[in-house]
Length: 184
Ligand code: HEM
Image 1 (cartoon, rainbow, N blue to C red):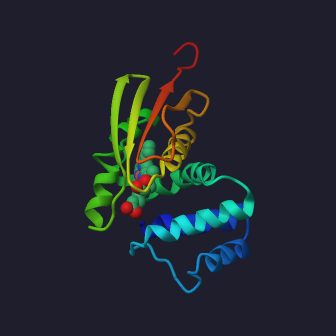
Image 2 (cartoon, rainbow, N blue to C red):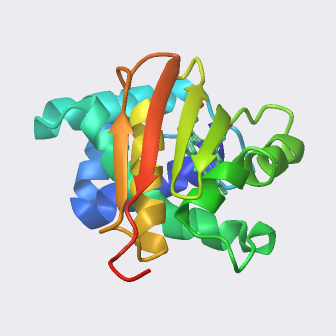
């Protein structure tokens, strides 16, 4: 997994919990000596171990933690890749273009990067369906990212996220519908 994502996970734990929680999670995961940087790709096992222990410590399920972390990630992801964003995009457009802009760029940056395939079908101006495909099985993160995008674009009240499969499979379907405000 991309170093930037793990560094953001560290910041998430430090801000939502505290620094000593992060140190404990690193120790429990057997990686307390590892220093993370933005340029390195780290084994996915690190994330699984960190989230697994976080779940055991907090009693919050791993799927729910993935969702919360995904939501938290968005402002930083948008900042990191801001040069690829178009000013006219809102939540649904952003999702529709991720595969051929953001994730495409991530794949180019490092041969070991492998963001999920997002096969997006735009059903209409206010609706789309995402088919998430990844053997990492992090569909919860995808749901959280969609929620984070809706916050980012100030559309949280309008965007409805309906996963139509289980969120922890290699293929996850997520329906996203925008209900426009009255008068639009
Ligand atoms: C600004 C937009 C986005 C940027 C810059 C971005 C960037 C990234 C990066 C850098 C990774 C790590 C890849 C790796 O380590 O191999 C990643 C993974 C991921 N992305 Fe995105 N992403 C964006 C939007 C989205 C959206 C809209 C979704 C879902 C709807 C999504 C779902 C995921 C998931 C679930 C992963 C975790 C890896 C996996 O499941 O295989 N991303 N993304």
